[in-house]
Amino acid sequence: MSPVLDLGWSDWLQLFTHFLTLSLLSVGGGITTAPDMHRYLVNQQGWLSDAQYTASIAIAQSAPGPNILFVALLGWHLGLNAGGIGWALFGVLVCMLGIILPSSILVYVTARWSHANRELRAVRAFKLGMAPIVIALLIATGWILASVNGDPARHWPLWLITVLTAVIVWRTRLHLLWLLGLGGLLGWFGIV
Image (cartoon, rainbow, N blue to C red; front, side, top):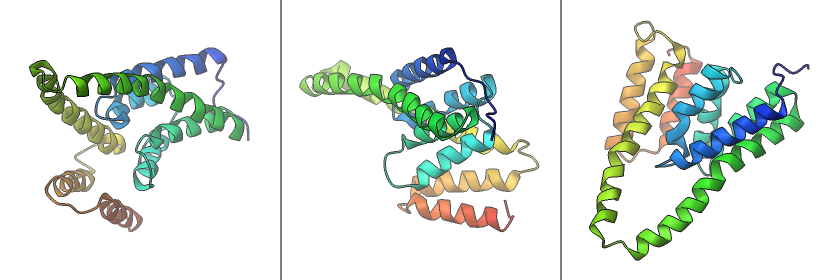
């Protein structure tokens, strides 16, 4: 199989530095940067298809383990598009190191500092102020994932299921895997 993408070392370095930057913006977890990853990888660079992007997130969310594994799958798909298994493993390494290194170091340092200063008004205000930002980023992620199929007027059942799923997750303790399984069955039978 011939590679679809012709990525040079400067492209890989650009990918690495982009994920380094996203790592510092991933307040609330790596999934909150998913809209920008989509913008960069799918819309701007054209390195991944919408289907590859969505599949990476869906597979990682339904698998056990940390949610950040979707970044590894993004790198895997990108590497496969660039030339095969070796490049896929390299893509996983580039994306995971880029997204994990800065945020891990920052979290370690700030967690130690904020725990030592947890009674300060500024620290408590900062933590309360970050909550709406995280919620908005999660809504943006849901919007990106739901809008992959295009026209909302034609695909209204998909949007209805997205909204219902969000409400069920918010108001109940039903495990997300049941909803993912139900969504998969609805897609398998061609209902959505």
